[in-house]
Amino acid sequence: MSNSRFIYLLILAMFLWGGGWSALKILTYDLPLEVIVFWRFFIMSLSFLPILFLIKKPLILNVSTLKFVAGSSVLNIAFMVSSFLGIKYGFAGGAGVVITTLSPVMTFLLVAIIFKKRLQNLQYFGLFLGVIGGAVLLELNHISLFLNGSNIYFLLCAIIWAGVTVLSQHSHKHIHPIHYSFLISIVATVVTFVYAFGLDFDLLSVLNQGTKFWISLIYLAVFGQSIATTIFFMASGKLGSEKTSSYMFLVPVFALLIAWVVLDEAVQIHILVGGAISLAAVYFINKKSVSKG
Image (cartoon, one colour):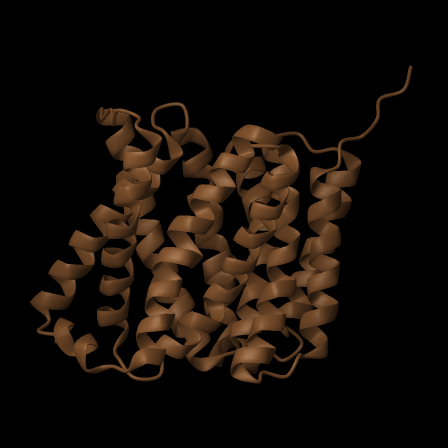
């Protein structure tokens, strides 16, 4: 497949990711969190089966692999719970901007702290912009709104996803990314089933839901996760991780646009301003200084 086709597929993947926030918002209307989280991971696991058949790579498990899978499964469940609660009380478009733009900043900060990485001046400037952009996005000038509203969940999502990203990057030494995502969804399915079943939630209540609910659930689990993630991993191998990651800047744009069209959400000024500052922060954090001489 040519590079240009991979670029078109990447844009499609970013669109699918952006639409996932609106789909999740629709799912928060009728059923409990525990039911939605289980079915999301269950359908996601099933959707990976044809993908695993197509890539035809042997699944190799060892102690190191299982450690990464276990850690990422816990973080993925925590991310799903936090994003559900945030979107239930907040805006889908806002979630797509806040989480997507703050996660790379949090990831870089986490790596710098854990691995004691020395930073360049441009990166310090990027982190400074990230703090400013985050403050605007999270409306920290209204601390009571932040503590009692959805933004605290969105911030938690960004921090959790930073942990997921770090684990994922190091897991590539031990396991294929598709296998990694599949195993995470399997473990998360089992854990969320045991939890929901143990607390006597009616997991079959989804069968009473209408077409809009099922479209949203299938979109979130299959198109917004399995298909989009697979495209992203394939493009990384063809175009390189740096170029592929740059397309993630499209996710906030698509998230806002889709939320406006599907949910009739108004675009908030502080989201646009804070998102723009945070995107600039990610640019400077990832920009390499040119050495002289």
